[in-house]
Length: 312
Image (tube, rainbow, N blue to C red):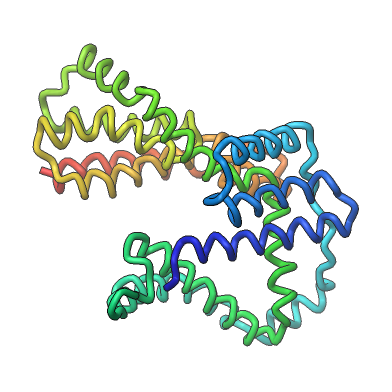
């Protein structure tokens, strides 16, 4: 069965490869950072929580003191790259397009391949398992098209991960932070504040409050996954679902989309907004955010209208 555990092991191998390449370049602090991350993916289920926490603190210290340093990976000369692009043409996009198409196909069709006590995909995490399977076949397709060896795929993956740097961890850490906030009762406090100071008896006002809250909290936290448990527990479930009788599935789907509107607006979402500006060597580090802001605000307005029309 293609389970989340199997995908975690694959991720661990990838991070160990990044650590190995860093060690080869004598960037020992970077090697320690990526090795610790890989170790958590490989043995996280078997390690004491305190040890996992200590590794996370160690990684934060390494990153905080500037120890995560990108490598100098050799790339093809410009002329060679242009010749490769000319030879492959639009077939370059096939591996990228395979990922969403195979993910949908696997989640809808392959999910039903199962027998007595086994199944091809993990039924509890069908979409993520399907995404992992699709990524695997996309890599095979890329290797077939480019006639490269699997080692090159590992090196290119390492190059991209190191180009992103420590920000690669942000989505996972911020999602965990959102759960901690919710466990600490922040969602309940948000619920009390909104009901105390805002008159949300009309569904449209409650929808607007939830959608804007998702976007604003994502701006602060930098990730919609971190905002979702807090705002949904504080506003979504008590007001939209329980008080106004809204559909929770539509609320969750469009609510996450509202959070992504906030992702487009914040430097806290470093891996989406700051890293691309750095990779493109833009003179203004907030240029990506400025370009995305009008689209984000229009989308947020559309989401509020859609949620109001579809949810009740």
